[in-house]
Length: 150
Image (cartoon, rainbow, N blue to C red; front, side, top):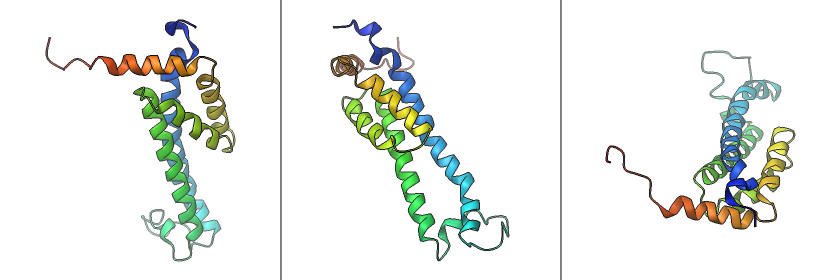
């Protein structure tokens, strides 16, 4: 067995958690930037009439496609944020959850595929199960020190 301090999981877990969190935020921001253009492309009316035109775009009466895309984007962002949080806090279920979401994210071109491959490379190492269990147990064995007390 590889010593815990030099295992691939121990070296890359924090980075992986941060990348999943950033990917969640990036997904939502990209959707909010693309939304006005999709609204216009799908016949949503006059381009940016009024100051809050971008806010009502997904609620267009014929905008069922935008609703479906918005639900998918926010669901993916929520799952990505959950993976990032689980890996950063070293939850016992985080490794399996991250692997499942990484497999589902493989079909998301470029950034999603790269992040999923990196996740699978880190978390499917030969001894990754044991290493992650040790990291999780070590994290949850001792409670964090109380602030202001010594």
